[in-house]
Image 1 (cartoon, rainbow, N blue to C red):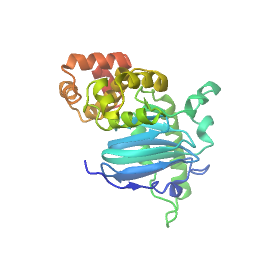
Image 2 (cartoon, one colour):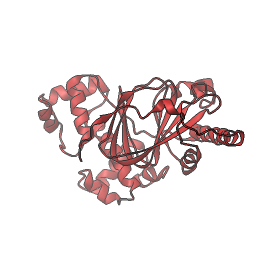
Image 3 (cartoon, rainbow, N blue to C red):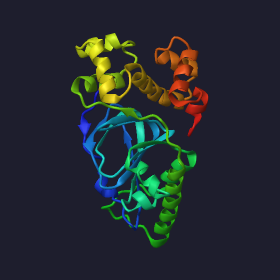
Image 4 (cartoon, rainbow, N blue to C red):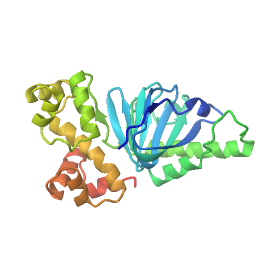
Length: 280
């Protein structure tokens, strides 16, 4: 895949949400290998890839976002975007005033919306998002009263659909320690390049024992479990393209479809067929 130069934030100031337009939509076509540098917004954000696949990285984690998933990013959280496959990235910006009143059904819910969350993106959620006016501010476009009222009704239903969206265990934790961070980012880029801890540790110039200790101390998990989360995230966009499970298993380096299915059940508690079809 051709490496493309990093670019800055995609004109978020032209899509600022407010009380009049509490949910704003922005649609950008991005080529594979495009990287959007780390940035943050004072408002909440939903990232949906209506076509293609992107990876969004936050300070302590990353996630793959295929068309069947949506990523919630709270206000003020720094994030960067890497385009895995040519993508139409649909971004929704939510008025900060909706951070608790709109998304949280109760005070107890408010805390979970203060963290990044991967959600199932239903067909209704995607359809509502695509109905919002995605034209930027600053031109001659002025919505009349009827158009604004329609947009508010769509926004209200969209927020309700977000509240109902199940959370998906696809977030991948990232470490702060430099050696392990470098190794983890290499695994994210090409998880099947090495199969064992010894091989990955050699790439990092450290012993397998040291890397294993860092996984436990930095991420609270093992190399095997962390790599399984990476492979699971890689499998999601393949499944979204309707690739057969046997082909996905082979693509990810599993000796058999049953071994791949066992990993999925262990990671998410359901069969591959049920998990990958959710939200499609």
